[in-house]
Amino acid sequence: MAHNPSPFADLSARPLDAAKFRDPLVTAKGERRASVALRALETLWLNTGTLCNLACTSCYIASSPRNDALVYLSLAEAVAYLEEAAALGTREIGFTGGEPFMNPDMVPMIAAALARGFDVLVLTNAMRPMRRFEAALAPLAGPKLTMRVSLDHHSQSVHEAERGAGTWAKAVDGLRWLSEAGFRVAVAGRQLPGETEAEARAGYQRLFEALGITVDAGLVLFPPMDAAADVPEITEACWDILHLSPDAMMCASSRMVVKPRGADRPHVVACTLLPYDPQFALGETLADASGKVMLNHPHCAKFCVLGGASCSG
Image 1 (cartoon, rainbow, N blue to C red):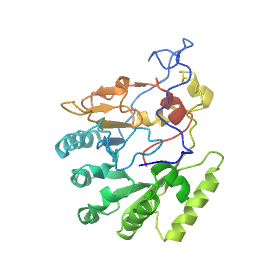
Image 2 (tube, rainbow, N blue to C red; image 1 turned 180 degrees about the vertical axis):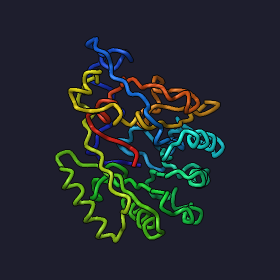
Image 3 (spheres, rainbow, N blue to C red; image 1 turned 30 degrees about the vertical axis):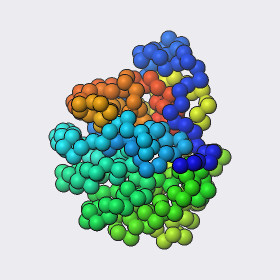
């Protein structure tokens, strides 16, 4: 699929300064690197696989119709983690990909999470992979299940610059189906560089009203990211300097399960943004993955500490 130039940054970009983010314990300046302890596993993400029906210009995980670097998670594998998470008192299960509905076990995995009393969040582009499961998916609608649809902007031109020609109408149609079928619906979007949050939210609200869509679970806006920006490393002193708590970071309350191609079984990683980096692979069980995370990656600074982002609801 051909793409127009995107206004969004490539979140997979490495730092301009090659001396940074090399040692997990100390920064390039020799200062003690910040770390984050897991205070409680509030959200467990299950990555269903990196295959996607789209090849978006700035996908941080490089999902595409050909990228199976992370293979499909099976229902049996998912259930094992759901059981462990239930024993730990986890509140929420998030499903992400790729496009989760490329995975043939997707609907049974949602049902298994709901049956165990979890709040469930599914990130989807609401296009054909989801629509083929309408009959099986519709009975699962209810207050415990939120479907978060990606609309990269409130304008068709910007959305299609990111996702490809013809994607806008299909995404909007899927969003409309979810709303009419009674699902709790959220939308994930982004601000353009130079666009204020208030302007972005007003634009999305006008769109929802024009479409007659109820977005009852909220609009999540991700800030613009500059891939060319050289970000600072986060030291232990930064928490006081920035007036932030490590407990507010994503890795203080969440983990993600992935299954790399060729692996016998899945394992747990620290963050939804870092599924490939081996230093963030924490073990095969949730218990194994309960240790602290060293913030030794540009995403830790750019997206989480300085960007204030969170993938969960």
